[in-house]
Length: 118
Image (cartoon, rainbow, N blue to C red; front, side, top):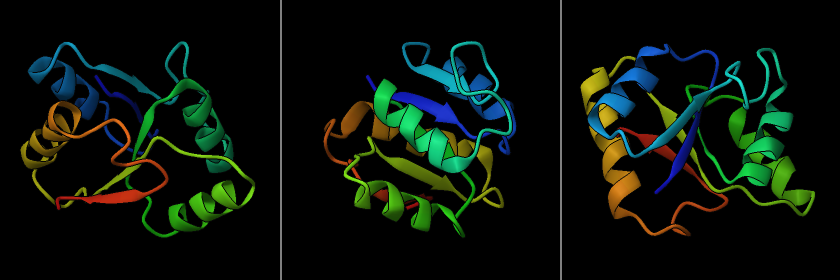
C-alpha cells in the first residue's frame, strides 16, 4: 500500500480523513515524528521521500515542478508527487487519493507529478 507524506501547508484534516477512510494507509505530515521537521526545504523533502519511499502530497504547483526536475537531474528518483487543488472539496481529493493508493501500480507515478483532481 502507498505511503503518503503531507506537506506542512496542507490542513491536518487531510491526514485524519485519509486514515479514517483507509486505515491501512501510512500517512505522515511534515513535522510528525519520523517525518521531516517543519520548514524543511522542498528539495530535502524530495530526498526524504525518495529514501523512505513516500509519495508527497502538496499544494505547491508553482515551484514543485522545478524541484522535481532538479531532483531528477541529480540522478535521483521520486515515488510520486500529488499536487492537490485546495479549492476542490476535500472529499473528492480524499476519494481520488484512496483510489490511487488501492488501484494504481507501484511504479505508475514514479518521477512524475499528478494533479488532483484528475
